[in-house]
Each structure stands twice: as C-alpha cells, then as structure tokens.
Image (cartoon, rainbow, N blue to C red):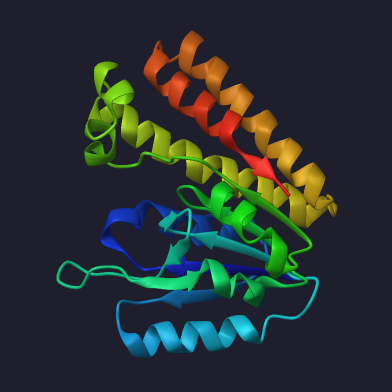
Length: 213
C-alpha cells in the first residue's frame, strides 16, 4: 500500500497535483494531509504510527537536513513535524522523501530509523527566493518561467514513476531507476525542445543529488 503525506502549504500548492493525477491514473493510496494547526500535526503523526510495515510512504513537502515540515498558511509558519530523532516512525517502511535536503536527513538518521529503503534529494529550489539566496543559481539568471517548468517536472516525474511502480510492481530500486530515467529525458527535452539550459541544469542537479539508502 502507498501512503502520501501532504503538508498543506501555500508555497507548495503545486504538489497538490500529485494525488489528483495519481487518482486519475487509478492508483490506490492513502492520503494524510497536514494542515497548519497543532491538532492536524498531532493527528497526522498518529496516522503515521498506524502505517503498516512494508508500506511505501511518499512525503511531499518542505524539509531540511534535520527535519520534515508540516502544513502552513499565509498567517502561520510551517513547523517541524518529524525531526531526525523521530525518523524511526518510518521504521520497516520504504520512504520517498520529495523535500529539500532529505538525502542528508536520511543519512543522518541511518543509525536509528531502521527504514527498509529510502530515496532523498538535495536542494529543490521551487521559489525565486531560494534561487536568489543561492549565489550560483542567482548568477544563471533563472526566471520564474523556468521555476514553474521545474516544479511541473517534479510533479510529472513523481506521478509517472509512482504510477509505473504501482501498476507493474517495480522494486524500490527500480522506482529510483525509472525516476532517474524520466529526469534524463526531461534534461534532453529542456535543451533540445525548450531551449532552456537553466531548466536542464536544475533537473541535472536534482538527478545528481538524489540518493537511495
């Protein structure tokens, strides 16, 4: 069974497409939404403890190398929902963490989390503020249009790979390989079709920083 953890946050609203598209593709999953209230955080954490061993969990939201974040609103800032020392909540599960610096978080929790397999990422700049705060990216002259295309690439790669994973019983290793294949295809399209080398560079970075444990 597949479980989707989706913090509701105005800065990641584009990720809401993922459960919608998976549902349209006929994929069965359990959706755990995390809103900005403490009650919602607590309810979501309780649901996480009830996920059966062997399940596949997708986390779709903000993160850092020491925590995953829950929901937020225009007036309430996001708060950590799972910290490094709480990653054992995913013990005996397979975890796909689509969040910034989740690769480092997974590495930092290897000693105690007991996760079967996990996939994490490096920086995933989905806002212009993140681009502007990074000297290397800022110098490239990345536009809002490129960021929008990058966000759609994230959505499309997740939807296509998880759909294939569920419909053809791919292993978790094969899920990672198929995700990489989709990113390679998008890199080529960005260069040859879109003529957007900045988009190609962003997807290339995402692919290179993706790690499986």
